[in-house]
Image (tube, rainbow, N blue to C red; front, side):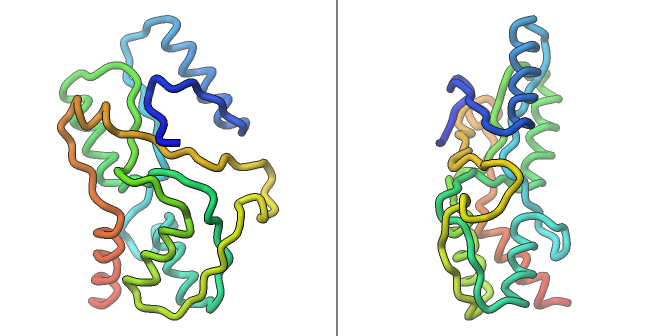
Length: 174
């Protein structure tokens, strides 16, 4: 976990292998392009069907939730993604960069934050991602470091807890 751009990739999903093939081709050909590896992207709208809003829907309708505590990623706010791409394009940046949030978090940790901010009594049952019947085995840790991008652009990524609180305020005002 906490992978940087120089770490060797070892995808286990078909989708990840396809991305690796394309990345390797571009790098091998020394094409003057910009490649972004995106972490799990989340939004700040109540019904955007991203990580946070989906968990909020679940805690409003379910008293007990089973959630993976062994799958880690570095979720990134959608507006950060847009701003980073814009800044990189304006500076004619080329190369390979991770667009990821600042924190390495599990689904369990994120849901705990949401429950705390929304003050619900939803009970969380921690489990393994392997306990879910998914079509393909999922990687346990796809967290990424955003250090290189922050160094190149001087960009400050928004904290996920701030966005959870923002969504709660939106819910109060509606």
